[in-house]
Length: 340
Image 1 (cartoon, rainbow, N blue to C red):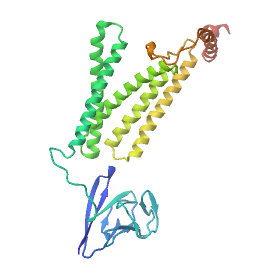
Image 2: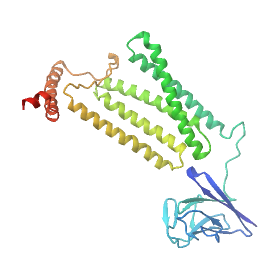
Image 3: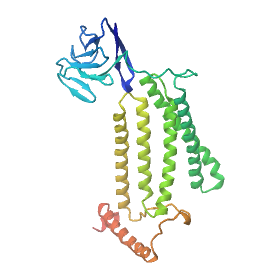
Image 4: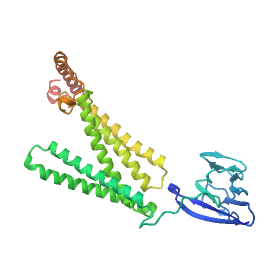
């Protein structure tokens, strides 16, 4: 009985770059992998030996791999092995050099055929569209609420609202188009709905988290400055959005994309908070605006007593004088220079 296997060369996100169909007259198959033309599977990878590894499929359909004394060995399940013989491959996947391979046999269990109703991934597309619609509606509502609470002149409310909405839509449209182009270059499809859902869902979550943090800050009396909570929430949202874009628009593996997405906002956020804290410490007149005013019914933890508040007010002058002394030492006024 003829045995048939398919060896797939995988790229980013386990996308198949090439398939090699191998048939053998008996129930067992033996295939060699390497850069040499003498191999059954020829790979264009400088980290692969001329004859690097051997794939065996026995009569029971078990896939085994052997290292043929290569320098870099074979990687199975995240472990690099050297000089091994007939190591089982439960899922048929392994790596030689920097190339990932997957072996398929006639015994593999395949998912049932999907019904064709106009698209290969209609349920997933519908979910993405629902997420995009929900994120867009919540984002517009958050923008309207922010403009409404920050506009002092009622007659300027409509102008400010339209200007803010147009600005956000133009900037988000350019951002989505940029990542859609990157997806087109990397995978041959724009995935613009996925990128748009990432943008608006992240913005909606950021707006809800910011409002909730400010309300809790005032209700519980935590007194955490908004100049700290705001940048931290923006940094977390930027990391989440960037990881979603990179996973869907670049061939890099998901752990690497997430690590880069977290590292970039973390570095920028740390630098911003350090510069902000340094500027506030140098300013004698700086008083942090800590709490959003909330209805009394939401206040779960009362503020300071009158005596403690009076002590805090008296301490303000001492802290301002200390900051003024430091600022004058670092940057003396012209009058002080002339008197010296």
